[in-house]
Length: 208
Image 1 (cartoon, rainbow, N blue to C red):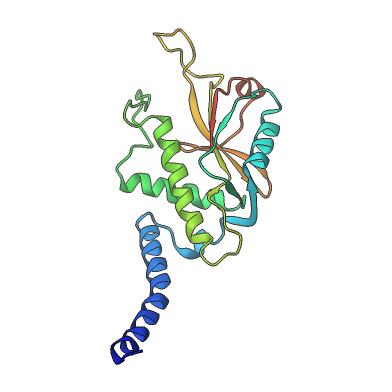
Image 2 (image 1 turned 90 degrees about the vertical axis):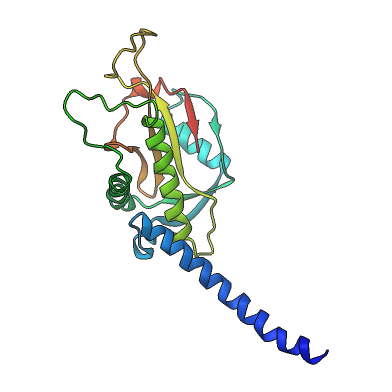
């Protein structure tokens, strides 16, 4: 080994030690942009990771076999979420919407529906922010999941307005969060909700 190689080895070793710290710092900076600290995100997951089939069975159980529709999976391993994390996340989610100038509290008479940012867009942003928090939560954890155990669900609310074109009630999307205290439905625009059995029967699409 020549002198040049001997000089390079320490530099490479230092770089390999520094790289994980740099990655973590970048992730934390990104989380800070949406108002999340590492301490907040650390309360997200339980350490329990489930596979696709387990998630499917748990989701079907919530539906009471009333909505046997496929789940479109985007990952293989899902992290069960702490029930206590939801309230804090909803506050951070609304703060993020405010920073993006997305209207949540709308003037009277405005239905709030937008072709460019409808309920599906709120759901997608909710899933993305939750996945980002899980990344921080798992940074030094041995239980590594690909996504949080959150399922986007499309259904027809009992009180949904009638679409004048189709003469049917308009569909809506919410998320189903599998937590340590049981399943919880959350509307990204309004908070925790309860779906009636009639509404569960109208589920047409699920994505996790």
